[in-house]
Structures are given as structure tokens and as C-alpha cells.
Length: 281
Length: 243
Image: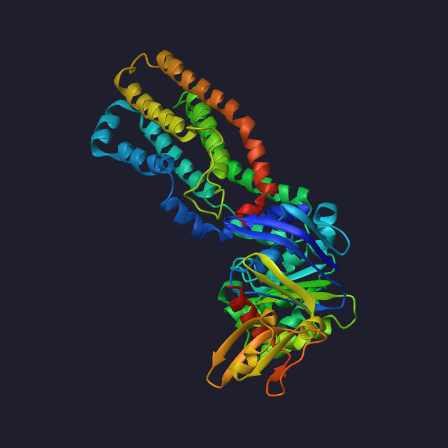
């Protein structure tokens, strides 16, 4: 469904370099990385508002050069940017106005989502941050997209809606023909829903793999420091001494062996992100 | 697009965008360029300064004073409209499933509105002036051309190259703004000159003077026209750097 191949892009002083990953239909991908890593830029490339200087972006088996309208008809988005809708108009007026451009826009569907999300039909400029993102989400869903591109929405949602949001996007992909890319630096939500994780740092791709592969290739080891030090050095990505012992992210292989005294677990995405970045910097 | 009348939809969007831009437009007017300050403040200052008024009442027709005042009103309105660039909606439209042609149409419609509205006022005013015979036809053409250049160019050269920063501007022709100021000064000179030196037998020298300025304006327009269209299109097509 989505394929980026050796994509390069310069945006001011920032470079995206050799970004390659793919996402099949029916899956959710988490795009993780620190603030300013390049997650939003990748989403903008996928939305066609930035064009790559090198490499290719293919969505639904076509490119923006070939069929921009076709792609955009099937892409829904939630962006962190302000001013995407007319502040002086209310939600329904905005949805009607921009919905005209989408082949599959359904006003009744929009109203249903808006009501489900607890949105009042007030002027867009009067919405809080969280409400504004909910409105974008309702609008995105109401034109029945096949791909949802979501840029850090959850941080602004209240806990109740966050849960609902995760349920909605899990349901969204259930028919196996739709996909979601969710960019965030808050990995807690991705633990529950992401099938694939793509990790970006300073415009470079660190890895893009499915959750099984992450669990296959990485382990968190916790225990006394001297026990950690006995692990092969080349396998330790980063270790950190804490109050209750030392923890280390290690590369895991089929033949890896660990001391019984060490507590070996699958890494959480947050741990993975933290330890890889620490190890890298 | 489900709506069958795309032209109307795009015009509707442009108008809505302008409506939403009034506050922003006013902010930009307040921090606008030297041409605007010249017309709105310096020129008005000269026009309505007590010493000038004494002098004007003596040598000018009352109708002429009204006409100059009206010209300033039209120009000010034009300047105001020209500062209302619809940036926010462009962002949203770029995300909508529009074809490249529709996006270009949107940008063009915006430009046409910016140029068309003040020009419409001007044409209405010009008709009254011609009817009253208070101003030479050359003067009407000259000011009209100047307004047309200005309102076309301001939309482009006020377009920031990056980040929508008003301080970064692109000029279709190098030194264009200085040239425009020079022309305005000539026009002020014309008003003063009309009263001081050409009184009595004023029409022949005034025609020569105004005719020369008009020719200069036409020349500037020919030079700029070559540059205008590619810049408009470049902006419409390569909007990403402004996003």
C-alpha cells in the first residue's frame, strides 16, 4: 500500500536521507523518533505536500505524479498544524466545504463521528487543541479513506478519548484493506496497536520492522552490572546503571545465552527508543 | 469533485479565504512597504497639510481635490486587499484531492480578485473623472496602469520564499519598488507643478509630462509581464517550500 524507496529530501537545514520502508494493507505502522527527527516531514511526503528530491514514493501502487487526485481521495490525515480549516466557520460548514473535493465524503458519517467524539458544532477557532484534532479525525474518517496518516494526535487527547481513538483505528484496519501510519514520540499507544515500527533519528532511518522482528532481535537485560558486563560487548547497544541494578538493551540472536540471574524481557518501544538513541549519541 | 461548478467552488473558497484574512491583512497593512506608507501617510499628509490646503484652494478646482482624495481612498482599499493573501486555505487545498490545474486556478482566481476589485473601483472613479473633465485622460491611464502593476506585483513580490516571512520578498524586476517610488514622486511633482507652473496654459505641458510617465509605466509593464506569469505558476506548483 505504501512504499518509500531511498527517499531524500532537504527542508531548510534539515535532511531526510535514504528513507526506505513499506507498509502493507491491513496494518498499523508506528513512526517513532524524538521531536524534530523527521516524522512529520515523512508524513508530508506521504501527503504529497512535499516532493522528494530523490527516491520514489508509491501509494496504492501509484505515485503523486501519476494520480495525485486518486491518492488524496483515499488518504485521511490528522496534522499538528494550525489553520487547516476556516476558523470563522463552524465544523459542519468546514466539513461540507472541504468535503466537496472528496469523492466519498459523507456528511452524515461526519455528523455521526462528530457526535461520537463529543464535538459541538461551533466555530473552528473556538476549538481546543484536542477538539481540533478530534475534528480533523472525524473529517478524515468521513471521506472513507484507505490510508490514515496521523501526526502525534494522542498527546492532546483525554484518556477516555485516547482509548476510543485506539479502538477506532484498530477497527479501521479490520477489513484488511486499509492501513494507518501513526507518528508519535509517545510509544505507549503503539505498544497496543502497532504492527510495524519505523524508527527515525535526525532524518535517518534507524530501522523499520514488524513487532515480531523487534522481539526477535532485541532483548532488555536487567540485573547486576557485572553480570551485564559478561554479555558480549558487541551485543550491548546501551546499558544504564540505576538504583536497583543495571539495564541494557542487547541484540538478540538465535544462539544468544543469558545468565540465569539476569531478568530478560522483550523491550517496550519506549525502552527501545531510549536505549538506541542513548547508544547512538 | 462532486460539485459540478468547480469555478464557483474555487471562487467561493477564495472569497472565504479573503474574508478570513481581514485581520491578518490589516496587520500587514500596518507593517507594509514603503509604497503603501507613501500613499497612505506621506501623500495624504501632503494633500491635507494646512499649507497645501491654502495653496490648493487657491489654485485647484474643488472637484480636483475631491478626485485626488477619492484616488487615495481607492488606492488604500486596493493596498488593503493586496495584503490579504490567502495562505491558510491554500494549505488545506493542497491536502484535498485537487488536480494541479485546479490548484493553479485557485491561485489565479485569488490574484484576479486582488487586482480586479481595486481596478473596478478605479474604473468607476475614472469614468466620473472623465465625465467631470477634472483630470486629463493621460493621468487616468497612468494611475490605472500603475495600480494594475502594483496590485499584480504585490501579490508576487510580497510572497515570501520561505516560511511566509513578510520580510523576504521576491521582486519580478530588480529595483522595481524604487522605480515605483520615483514614479510616485513624479506624480506629486505633477500635482505641484500643475498648480505652480502650468496654471493658465496647463494642458499641453501636462499632457507631455503625463504622457512620458505613462510610457515609462508601459515599459515597466512590458518588462515585468515576462516575469509575472512564471513566478505565479512557480508559486502554485512549487508551493511546498512555503508550506
